[in-house]
Each structure stands twice: as C-alpha cells, then as structure tokens.
Length: 108
Ligand SMILES: [Zn+2]
Ligand SMILES: [Zn+2]
Image 1 (cartoon, helix red, strand yellow):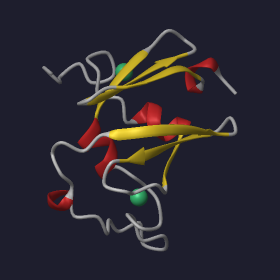
Image 2 (cartoon, protein in one colour; image 1 turned 180 degrees about the vertical axis):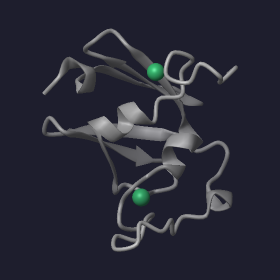
Image 3 (cartoon, rainbow, N blue to C red; image 1 turned 90 degrees about the horizontal axis):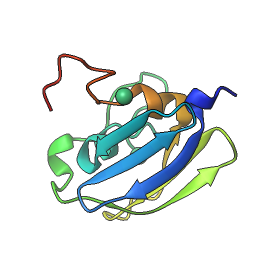
C-alpha cells in the first residue's frame, strides 16, 4: 500500500476532520462534506450507486465523535447523528480531499 493512502494521523475537530497522510499531504475535510459522501449501504444504494442520503437531513453542526481504523484499507467515523456505519476506504477518502493542491480552483 502506497504511503499516499496511509493516514499518519486523524484529528477530529469541531468543524472538520484533518487527515495527515504518509506522503506528507494534509487533507482537511468539512464534517458535513465527509458525512454526505458516506458510501455505506444505508447512504448509497449498492446496485445502482444512487444516493439515498438527502444532504438536507444532515445537520450543519455534525461532527465525528470517534474513528476506527479498519485494517489498513479504511477508516470508520462515528458520527454525532448516530450513524456509525460510515466506512471510508482510504483511496476514496484521499480522493475526497478538497484542499487547494487537489482542487486548485477551490478558493476555500
Ligand atoms: Zn452511511
Ligand atoms: Zn489535498
């Protein structure tokens, strides 16, 4: 597994989750953004990949209360809305990064 997909540290903040990767990259994710992009069977219909989660139902002050590493391939966030099944494969998580390096057009 490449260092690019190896999280060295995960910091849970009140409004964002900051992941530091093995290659030195740092990814700040807004809590709600990450919650909305949950890919579990409750949030995304498995056979059609249709989103079942309505972003409007996610509180803007959602935060992650805890996280677990799932082996070496994924991280699981325990969300404050009691959604505990959100498993984010590390490659997906990295691809969700919204920083200015990954999204140069994103002014913030
Ligand atoms: Zn989910
Ligand atoms: Zn990035």
